[in-house]
Length: 238
Image (cartoon, rainbow, N blue to C red; front, side, top):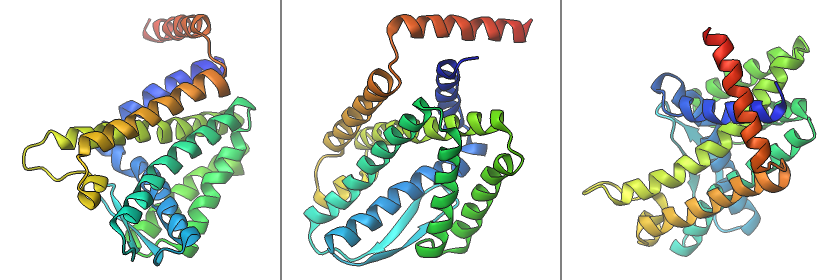
């Protein structure tokens, strides 16, 4: 099966796993960590406060310890976290377009190691990052090229899917009566629906850019790949 077909399948798989409680928390923590790292880096680069600790929790959420005085600056820090995740997803798919599958795995392992050394400061977060890095190291150690390819495509798809889901969640929270607004709305008192639409818009643009520019997908190619996927599934079922 071609890389194009694998990407389509992994996007569907990432969406499915994001809805399964058994796997959702474990894999969503990867997206959470990346988002929080961008928060930390934004504070460091702008020198607007202090932020050097990240805590990850069993429900898939996380937090950073930061001291930023201005509400507007807090909004910018949170927005950078969402946007940085999307930019990273675009970079990962760029590597996939050149079949640099092992580079993606090395990136995530390096990210886990650096996060443990510099930022993650609670036991659960450290244990999760260690387990995640160890799982990724297995196919590299045995040089299983097929596993490396599948895992790299899945992780890249997961980051993109999670970013889009987060935007929908912000929109959904704005319609819940008595519910807590999203992070941006809580800080700046901006309606969550506006924040969600902005995040969703840039998420969909990132997806469009990945498929049309990075991977150079065309409508005819997608139809062909979908037919190929259906044929494989029919053989599997029969």
